[in-house]
Amino acid sequence: MPDHPADARPLKDRIILVTGAGRGIGAAVSRQLARSGATVVLSGPRVSELEVVYDDILAAGGPTPAIAPINLESLHWDEAQTLVDTMGDEFGRLDGVLHNAAHLHGLTPLANFPLAEWYKTLQINLNAPFVLTMCCLPVLRQSSDASIVFTSDQVGLQAKAYYGAYGVSKFALQGLMQTLAEETRDNTNIRVNSIDPGPVDTELYRRIFPEPDLNGLAQPSDIALPYVYLLGPASRGITGQHFRAQEDGPWQSQAGDELKAP
Image (cartoon, rainbow, N blue to C red; front, side):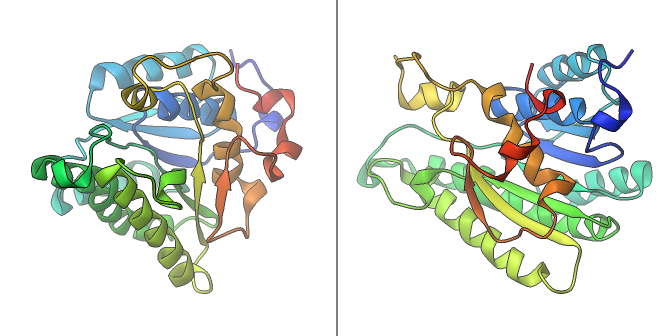
């Protein structure tokens, strides 16, 4: 049985696609979205990881999620369109997209950066989110209040040495967010924002810091609330903005027990 009453679920009946949903921040946000009432479409390359999140959501009494395995490294337009068509047939609309999946090769000077890794990083971090977003726009327009959220990074706002294609892709992703927000601001019900989770104990963080000091480091579940805020009705009307998850923000007013990560 659900562990929260229906009226404590502000995202009830919303359909939200999450990339990178099998682990880390994507998994934690997917669980929290479901706790808040959303039907989550779990996307990632490894079905076994998505199934764990799927089972966790059901065990917590959340709405039955869907699993949509895709590999962003090889994602092309036809595959993305097939996925979106399937969601459209199943749900009739889409209320939100969280572009959370990301790839980081490691800290490497540009002069030594492997060309294959450059292309791979830009494909996963920039090209695939663009293709998937463009395919999603028609079903997002079917929603009365749709939200697109990009997970950003501080190195995509202020350059930092050795972050290579990852840093460049995050700069470009920020530009994509702002451009799309301007193009949808006045003629659609779609809003577009980005959020920097900050230092979080994830696989990507450990790739940068192989022996991290975990004392005080945020866990993925600690920063789920800002994502729920941006993907839910409380942020209606906010578009083209960049947020930092670990700073005080408008989501603090939403921090009732029903929105606190378990």
